Image (cartoon, rainbow, N blue to C red; front, side):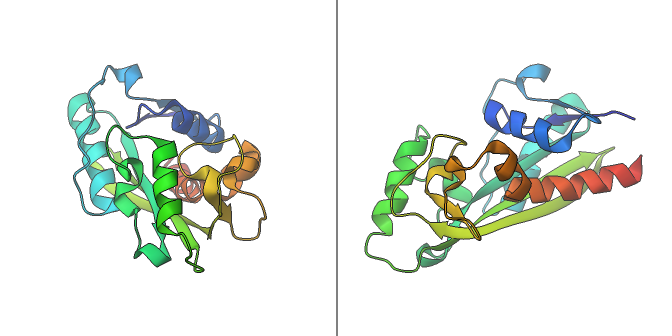
Length: 194
């Protein structure tokens, strides 16, 4: 049975990644597919609050099963920053390159480069709310490297690897990422429902 879900995002890179991870039993529609073009407010203080805000916004507008993710980079030496502010860390408009430069300048001369990507998914299925979480531990590189991926991928070296996420193939990235881990939990949950 094919499950149709609306993913509360207009980020085509993320939508493509989610298609690859969830597979053919799911039809995933992005915000543009359902006529939502406005920015959805993300004013929460936690990944859980932001994921719920986004999913709920789309669910209220469409009445359809929806999921949203909120994810970010949490760096030990920066007390968990950029965290929920990852997308806009260097200010508006959001800019991956400026965000990366800000992180690198704040970690200048700091030895502890431990970090993790955290992803929280909020799924609203038949009006009920469910959460799924995934994390990917690693370290921040000294300088950006690689052209794949988006966001902080060029400076994040996952545990057990010598390359940044932006240097890994999408197949490898999609099999270890924080989003993959959270999506796998959601996929198992939905499969059990069918």
